[in-house]
Amino acid sequence: MPNNIGSIYENLDLTKYNTYHIKTSTKYMICPNNTDELINLYKYIKNDNIKYFIIGNGSNVILPDTKFNGILISLKNMNKIELLPDNRLKVMAGAMLPIVANYAINNNLKGLEWAVGIPGTLGGAIYGNAEAYLCPIMNYVKEITILNKDNELKTITPNDITYGYRTTSIKEQKEDIVISAILQLLPGNKEESLALALDRKQRRFASQPLEYPSAGSVFRNPSKELPAGKLIEEASLKGTNIGGAEISLKHGNFIIN
Image 1 (cartoon, helix red, strand yellow):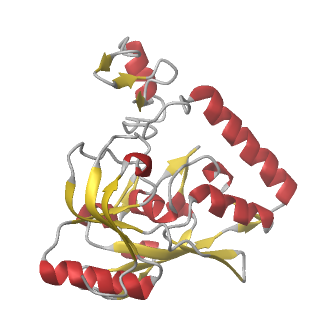
Image 2: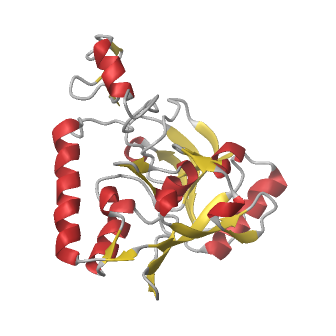
């Protein structure tokens, strides 16, 4: 294995690296510390045709309960946040959304208050166009830097990709890695944003089974008028379980461990 590819962990238990807390493991997990190390790692993987999977916070995935005989790439060490002029932030892909949201609030920028309770990374959020309270992350993305399948760094804009409800073309084609993004926010008031963020967090705790391991909402909503959780509840499926998986009694769109 080459040098300068990041921190390497061998035969790693992944239970704490996925929010379902599924007991599984990987032959290698490698955490690049910067873009150059990620480029070196991606080149090595491509040249040797090694199986790989990219993970953020493990909050929107179900990992297999068998050992992954490849390289799990974690971007958790690439998490820098930088304040730019004109109400913008430059954020690395491994930065956690609640940290990004609080950074914005503390700098009197508004727009990300909805993200204070989402346990994912910015890279994962852009990959799947995460949203809450009808606020998708792509509403705030001005530029995205990706490492493409040819191991080239490219800066693109939302106009260069397609995206919609909980999806993007980056997610569909799977080989581009989100490195960082520039977010365009609005001038705000710290105290007002803190109050809104607190309201959003309290709503989540009141309505979602956050005391149990889960991956958040499982199914996409067919429409705003017919959320998936409501349909599941009307089908009397809350509380249904198979093995250790159970449809939450608190929220029909959560499958808990």
